Image 1: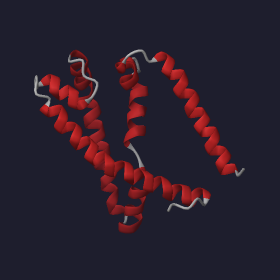
Image 2: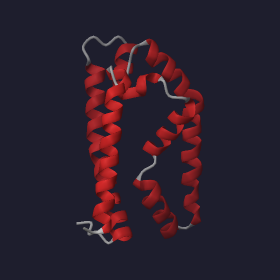
Image 3: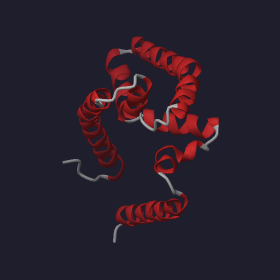
Length: 157
């Protein structure tokens, strides 16, 4: 057994263990989706950033800066400004309103906020999210394949 395969097996075993342990604590859908809204601000902040930064940050941004020059660093300023704006002006209000409306997802939040009894907002929002996340997840798999190829010599095709 190669070291790479052994590493993947250990990683999967850790994921399985964490999944089994957290399964015991999740009693409701809110516990599963939002950790029961019990996480502190720093845990949520780091979790959001870990989720938000992906192959574009590890591969795409350095690649475009290398190819186009340091003028592309403006992307970093724009992204950082948008993230800070969202944290300072949107997140607290969204958390308060989503909790008051018993919403666990963004489509559900808008559905409850605008009292959409036909579920049009939720349906349309879900279709948009699924459509764009399909391409996003594909890009992450491609990025992961490239990183694994360069790091461990695993073919990416």
